Length: 362
Image 1 (spheres, rainbow, N blue to C red):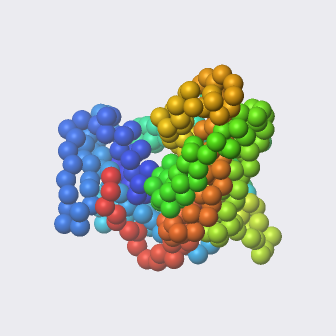
Image 2 (cartoon, rainbow, N blue to C red; image 1 turned 180 degrees about the horizontal axis):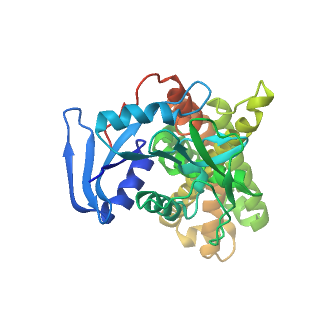
Image 3 (cartoon, one colour; image 1 turned 120 degrees about the vertical axis):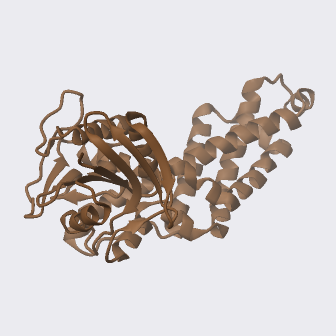
């Protein structure tokens, strides 16, 4: 029977593909080859043998993936009859996000995860994979009944591939959201260890000093919210500036794409800053509850206190700590911070030349 291959980029794409495909297969087994590349083998009912691998196709210096060029090599090397490639890199055509591309000369299809958005993207990927595996996947898009933005055929299809793109008023927003999801903002938290230490040290100042208690008690909720926004904005802005994550366009042709990349960077770093702030608030609230006795706090403030007082103290302390965390980020690993956005990862992919690259994680 014809063999179907499914390949996915390292990290989130490979994990999602494995999580979706493995339950659909029968006679599933994994093996490890000499180069330690993990492989899933199985049988898709009514379709035949399926092989899932972690492999990467390089981008060109212009930011494209020549699917047709690589398809012949992959199909011949693996002995597959057709294959599906899932990537987390954002691809565009005529300033519209690419959902999928099909090679015209070979039975190969590429799926770009960012175009699937942030919420419900796993379900959309499952639909794409299922329809392609079962041979019913559309290349020419049409309005869908599930509330998704309209998908249509790109106007610049080449002689080598047919392209399906997002259309509609929110297409760019959906792509940016998908890029933020692919960046996985929560994974930046361990990298920012120096920032976390600075936040804890500075925030702890607010727990041990009565002047901060008095100030927190006098501040209204609206003012505390403004201070929080200022702290998160300052932290995120410094991370972007210090790590040179902001791109500046030199040509009209690249300006649109660089705006998309910058929006994704702001979204990723902004969500990371919010997560860190919430973590700091939780730590400060626990510390305030443990360290400050109610009776002593009441004597300092000369009034009855309750849980709202402790929340205000933790709130202001977390804001002070987050502002100081920007300085602590100077000591964090800037390469790892830059690699958490598409800027560095895409640059590295564009510098790869030659055949596709096999990786070790699934």
